[in-house]
Amino acid sequence: MEKLDMDKPYLLTQAQRMDLLNSHNKLRDMLHTIWDCHDLWLSDVKHLENLQIELQRILKFAPKLDDDGRPMHYTDWVLAEHRGDDD
Image (cartoon, rainbow, N blue to C red):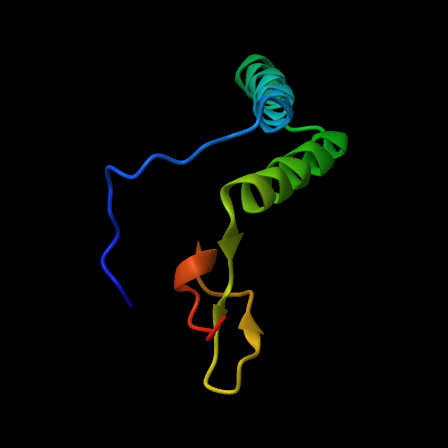
């Protein structure tokens, strides 16, 4: 695995920023509900899942690959360019 250049910029489109902003606002609403009620509505779980998907898509996160090239969704994910395939 090559070393990451931590100073390398990562560009986001305005549409991607808006997607993240919308997810951020839903997350804020959910946290306020949790703080106020000490509870989580099951309907909010969908919003959490959508936030995870948005982060994976926009920031290019990917599951690590096993020795046979199969994704290991149950492990910590990595940056797509460091996932271990030969693309």
